[in-house]
Length: 324
Ligand SMILES: NC(=O)c1ccc[n+]([C@@H]2O[C@H](COP(=O)([O-])OP(=O)(O)OC[C@H]3O[C@@H](n4cnc5c(N)ncnc54)[C@H](OP(=O)(O)O)[C@@H]3O)[C@@H](O)[C@H]2O)c1
Image (tube, rainbow, N blue to C red; front, side, top):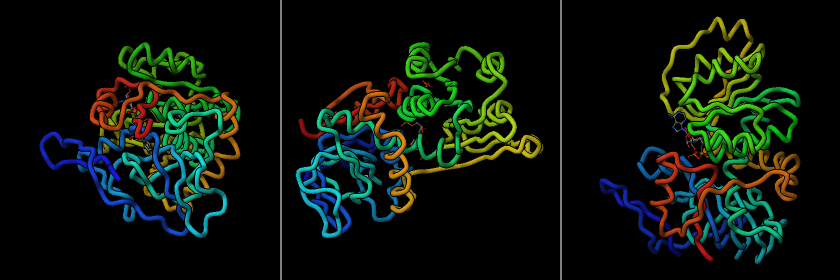
């Protein structure tokens, strides 16, 4: 098969080239990939800063949609020919991938592969962190930083559908407008005003923060959290080290949570996927929740696609088409 490999040069150049075919274990399905999507983590992996976990395919790509070509002996829920989408530990930037069958969802007949490639990584990340880790409850308020990102656009919709008030931050007015369209009640352009001041002028605080910024936002996130609030840090785009007011944490009875999805065990991912499938999957299938897609490019243009994320130009997902 062919896959995108990274050359060890100053540009970390990407090449669509022949690589060994994957093999299918008894609990896995081998999928002919039709589309995959770019995630921020791919840029880190390409730079050599986010190696795949042990046992994962060496290629970038944390999600895909495609058609099953082969199933392992233990697989009961799928058969060759089924159209699926799935969560990967790597290997989406390729023509084929072997994936635990429990990490697949059936692609509805009226949905195309581009739609299917825009779901797994961002919706499962948003779901796991907001609803499992932070236990967001109906009627509570959630603050979603990076509201126009792939994860953010998924998170806003999930919280909105769960009957929660959503506040979002984003770096351009166009992104702020999209956050509002997706269900945010209030959104702040954090480059034009201090997000904490703007939010406190609008509300008495939030119950859950989904944070991607890290160090620069920590004090303000904690200030915004109400009694028994929960802060989930899923990335540290402004830095990893910060001072923390432990008294504030204690007195407000806050919970600070750090989380990654990719390196979790297959079993943990099974539980997340099963819970997501029960609660939110029907809303994606019937259109109450939308995929948000910035652009679709052929896999051979993976470097251009990654540049869109690298320059913060995307609202939602950038899709790579592997087969037409
Ligand atoms: N822990 C996990 O398991 C996990 C899983 C998936 C994703 N993530 C993380 O979640 C984040 C979103 O992922 P994604 O793939 O959806 O990303 P994405 O679509 O590339 O969006 C990231 C957005 O972050 C904003 N941003 C960039 N630098 C920033 C900074 N210094 N301060 C504040 N905002 C900044 C930009 O939007 P603006 O223009 O609005 O600033 C950018 O568009 C990434 O950081 C990713 O690493 C974590």
